[in-house]
View 1 (tube, helix red, strand yellow):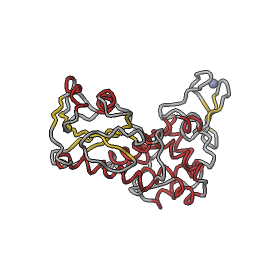
View 2 (cartoon, protein in one colour):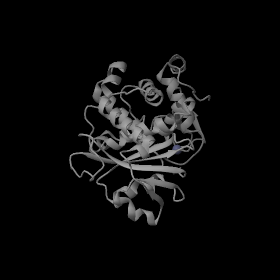
View 3 (cartoon, protein in one colour):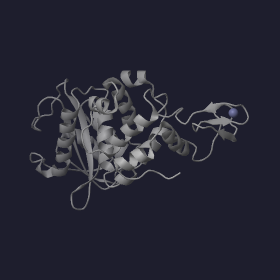
View 4 (cartoon, rainbow, N blue to C red):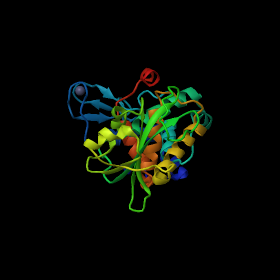
Length: 297
Ligand SMILES: [Zn+2]
């Protein structure tokens, strides 16, 4: 099965004309390494018209969407493929109400599915950044503040952002995560998840980074109102204005998902050709997420 490449909407619509076209695509990813029956472990099966597989031994049938993030999607696989295509290839801000209007869904349905997509966009943490890294914290919501004296205002959501720079000081990769406060313990989370120990890390003079210098190679310099962290601050500014203009309200539980989406696209801006396929593979390999989990977590 040929993987879909590129960002051309007409080619996409041509390739995925029916739900069944999409199911065929999903099944080829899902059973790439062959079929194994979930009930009895047998490996021989019949392929059905809708690309489900029926075990030759116990007759258990598994659909191409079962146990993936497309599991029981109410509005059909084709619409969900289009939403994945838009979310992976777009450079624009896509809100749930916009998606709802475009695909004839309620904003609520669109939002739930889009959150599943964002879960799939989450970094595995398997490829930590290992070059020239700049790190800073920021708040979401409320007014921008000077760096003098960290704000501990409980209403503002706090986050920490790390970027890896090229030799020319351009952004290579970026990660942002939500943290509860600006203490060393919280800041350490982005280090352990996304930064390799041998990296050359630069931060401003915030004391929260002092204890981390024991384990990591950290140089602390004056921020000079952000001038010494220009590329990083441009990204922080972008993620904040993206959040502000796209989503009317970003809850504490969902903010990490929005960071996932933003960073996923940014980190793949050089590999746009295969980004849709990459996302579908992630949707298939991820465990299914129930709607209740999406709301409560
Ligand atoms: Zn079986």
